[in-house]
Image (cartoon, rainbow, N blue to C red; front, top):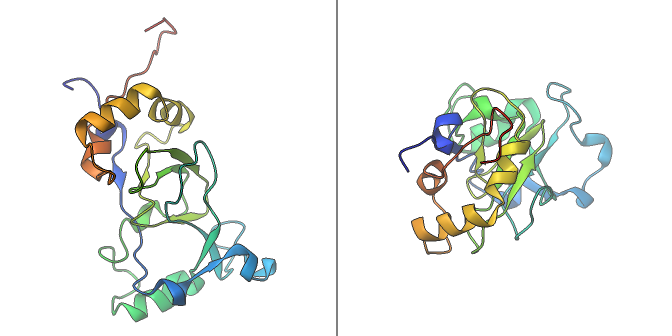
Length: 180
């Protein structure tokens, strides 16, 4: 664990905590699709929301939408924090709408999934963002491997994965295309 880790390329980050989920979150099938945000800045009310979920590798678990109208004004107002605030409960805002890797923080065996652009992530669906803005596909393959699952189980044998457990995972790349 003295070599490069996930933390060296971009650490795991907890996200939004709405403060009242039944007020700010909806399943996509409950909404009019014309109100779905397609790209950041299109001023649509409902944005993809990664909140963790069941074991599901690679993609998925994006059945929720969050009310992010007017840059999340209602959520900020409800939690009594200004729109430019970046802390609990509106954590890591600079990573909102960026492509990354999301995972479920609870529930046993971990699974890592692509967090598509134009999505917001939750505390329970914390996410990893590559500081070098490289594609997350190599990292997600490494994270979903049996070796990573074994190491995570050694680091934390409980069913709740912590940010620090993810950050300590080994990360290596074969930059010269040699077999490792």
